[in-house]
Amino acid sequence: QVQLVESGGGSVQAGGSLRLSCAASEDTIRRIVIGWFRQAPGKEREGVALIDTTGVIRYYADSVKGRFTISQDNAKNTVYLQMSSMKTEDTAMYSCAAVSAGRRWSGRRPWDGFDSWGQGTQVTVSS
Image (cartoon, rainbow, N blue to C red):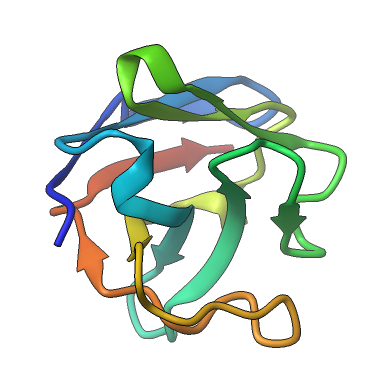
């Protein structure tokens, strides 16, 4: 499995921006996809954005399209989530996760198949 460490969480006012980072312990050949998920208190975890190792395949949740951007720096084994025009409903614990090489992943169910998870970083958006 891939070891993942998130950073960049914090507090921001509505309309503001934050950038989250997810550092992977293994290089890109060890994983197929890295994604960001979030879970707010009392709610189910939801997929936010994901990117494959080539950077060609990217998925976004409808709730963040046009506001969040996922990107990666493969030389640094790091995936970023740039969050802009943030809303109070973006408040959640954000975690990154990876689909390890050798596992199956399909665009038909893009949020399934993740087998490695980071500890998470809290994001709080105030009005």
